[in-house]
Image (cartoon, rainbow, N blue to C red):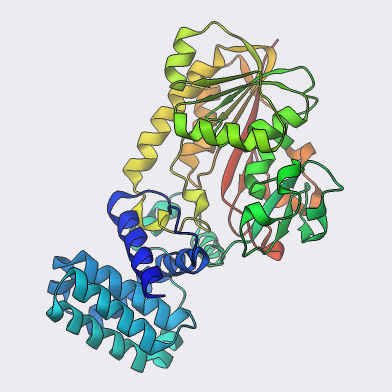
Length: 416
């Protein structure tokens, strides 16, 4: 387990210093490593306040390794069932190896204090997840009550969501079917070891991410451009429904994953293009019946799966992504046939990347109109429909099933 904690410390350090999504962990103890990292990130705001009481601010500022070891160790002591002696000895050993014996002694003393005060510390925990900067970001769009519900829902470890392509899949009996057809269940093993993995009857896909394609009507024979297509979840949905799909993405490695995923599902797009979307739109004269623009965004809606987002994203990140989204929307508009559809979506909670973005686009492009998505949504899910007919999914929606990723979807039609 000490090696697993070393791996967790490396992943945790990488996340907070270079801001990638949670990376892959070694296969041995991967579940423990990811659970430890995510648990620490979810409770980091409160644990940081604890460390301010028990630890020297000077040392914490000087040594990231010491600070991150303390955060992980405190999270494991307070919120996981690991034996205290093993936790303390492991992190003391890691810090001694990478820093020195004085830093290791400091970690030993602080973690022992936290363990001794465990009952009192847990009793004082109000489940505060969001640091002040991120909370202020959300308060620009939502009331304090809604932000509190988003925060509460984001503390929960998400279950596994699957899109079924065949009702008779062996996987279909393993969990609950959500409104609009997603299968959800708890899975702690490897995805590749689930039933029918190689049969092409299902794909892992979050409920919210599965909705954009479900908002489209008859796709048979339609020319569809899937922008930012990798890793291929929406591409697969489009192909299953008979669309002629061009999959476009800037990343060659991610497109390799798309191809692997589609091969497993026994699906073949009409074309796969590795290119920057802006370059593609400015150089091509191709026209499409449908453009699905799953735009690059702040990913603030993925808090349940990527809690680091709350600690890393800033208002500047939102503004930067919104400018790119605007450019992609403007370019997409000229490549859609009359009566064609522009389907825009982001996994963001921020209106600047959602409602405000689309309303601004409609002001600049009177040739497009909004198509309300309300008719596509069952009565049990009307809370996700915005006044404009967009979909605005928040983490506390579907709370009876365990929540959802934050998402925004708008369907626009080019006037004939």
